[in-house]
Image (cartoon, rainbow, N blue to C red; front, side, top):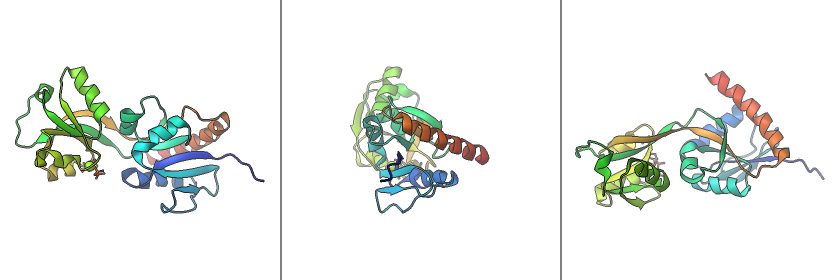
Length: 215
Ligand code: PRP
Ligand code: MG
């Protein structure tokens, strides 16, 4: 029986990071056997298995050691996986996590958020940020289409990812505070075995060459 060890990598199943994550693996000379229809795929020429997962679930999979590594947005790690190590910054999927208010609202400072209702998918990030600034606000946690919240009277403001800014623009919102800047990173499970750490080293070596060539 062939009993070779593979390193298990989680990548985003669908969404912004998916394509760029597959591209960097490809640029590393790793060819993955099949598309996104299957949730698991093996590489043909590298000891690697790909798991296509939901972004928000990846930190827990890493923590549990169900996957060894992941390509994930730093913003998701900051929100849900502060305990998880980053091996490499990958330079793509750059975005901000920002606070925004309706265009027509005058904005002076972070103190303006005192007592306000903020809709967000990033409660930990917002809570920490506001705590540091000494501001108390009321958080409404929603999982998507956050920018609609002020228009339907659910919140006074929102906190979400800003990439091109077009979602803010289309919903008549303006960015007033940038809480953090994020990009895709290679994250590592605290439970990775030493055998798989050796495979990780080889992968990192390839990733570093790819990133250098991209500069
Ligand atoms: C993401 C994010 C923002 C938007 C930012 O939403 O939640 O809403 O993209 O990108 P932009 O600045 O380029 O417009 P997504 O489209 O993934 O949908 P969702 O929030 O419903 O998951
Ligand atoms: Mg959105």
